[in-house]
Length: 287
Image (tube, rainbow, N blue to C red; front, top):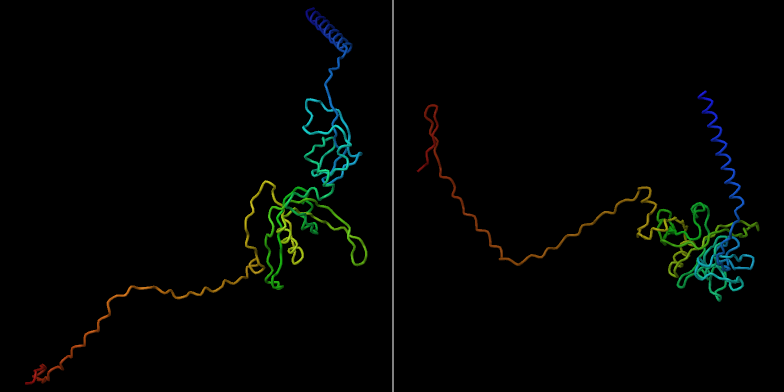
C-alpha cells in the first residue's frame, strides 16, 4: 500500500512539472520581441583578400553598416574616393580600408609606393633551396650568404654573410624563355635594401652564389663574421709559421768593464831526491 502511494505522488509530480514547463515555453514563444536600434554608419571594407601593391577597383570594395561607436579612425564612407589607389599592406576580407594601408594618390599602385624613402628594391632569382623551401614570404627577414672565389681557384672559395636582417618585399614566380624557346617558371625574391646594400647584393648574385638564411623577425642583432674557406671547412688549413724577431732592449750605460788582472806565475817545484831504505821510500828536497 505504501509503495502505491509513493508511485502516485511521483506521477502527480511529473505531470505537474511537465505541464509547468510546457506552459512556460508557450509563454516565452508568444512574448513579442523588441528590436533595439543601434546607430550605424557606412564603412568601406575589402570585398576579398587583397595583397600589397594591389590597385583598388570598385569590385574589390564593399559598403557595410558599422556601429557608429566603434568605427575605426580614418575609415572611409565612400568607395569612389579610394578607387585606383594602391595598397602598401595586405588586407583580408571584410577588413576596413584605412589610410595607413593606402599609398598616396600620386604614388600609383604596384611595388614603387611600398618602397620607403632611402631604400631600394632589388630582385634576385632563387630556387627552392635558396628560398628556404618556400618559407621566404613577404614581410620576413633574411640574411644573404655569398660564396665566391677572389682568385677563381676552388681552394680560395669563401662563404660570408654580406647582408644581414634584410626585409623581403615580394616572393613569387615568373616565366622566362630558355634557349630552346620553352618558358620556365623562375622564383624571384625582392629584397628591401639601401643603395650600398644593393651594390653588394648585385655583385654577390652575379660573381658568385647566394643563399638566403631565414631569421626570427624579433632578432635584430647583426653579428660580424669573418667568413669560412674551403680549407678551413674540411680541416686542411695549415697554420702559418710565426717568425720571431729579435727584441732590441735598450740598456742604460754603466761603468766600463775593468781589465782582468794578469795571472801570477807559479814557481816550479824544488828538486827532490828519493831515498830507499828497505821497503820504505822517502823523498828529500835537494840542497
